[in-house]
Length: 162
Image 1 (cartoon, rainbow, N blue to C red):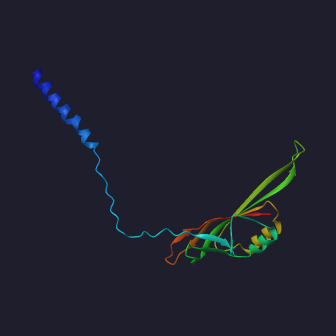
Image 2 (cartoon, rainbow, N blue to C red):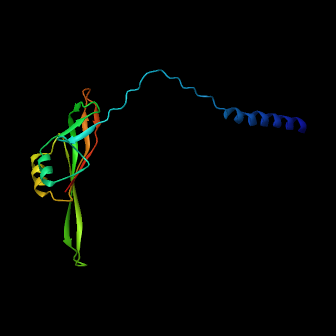
Image 3 (tube, one colour):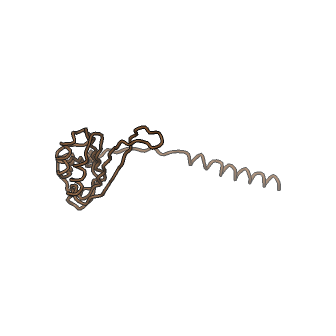
């Protein structure tokens, strides 16, 4: 009886012991080329007026740019309407530290979302009058709409004031 139980145990171990070996064999993957060219994704580029971001510009020029709308084009130079964007303004100020008596620099950042393609008149006037060297302007989360009504995110803009 013990011999029969031992043989049954060996058979069970052989059956279950060989199963993982079969599970580890991998089928070869074959790639079939169809000859179709995959359309590339649309790449959106944003400008303020016709000025691309990533530049250091004089305050007088940026003040005139603030009146311009955001313009978004794809890689084929097709224009897309801007639905909304977030505007951020970072400014720096010098002050005397009360504890040390030494001059220090602090920064302030304000941001506001807009549901159009340009800043409203209040922001254009306020920011335009305060621009000074070292300040930075950010146009982020720029949303455009295509002809099908689908929304897309465009590239952000960043300007540094000289």
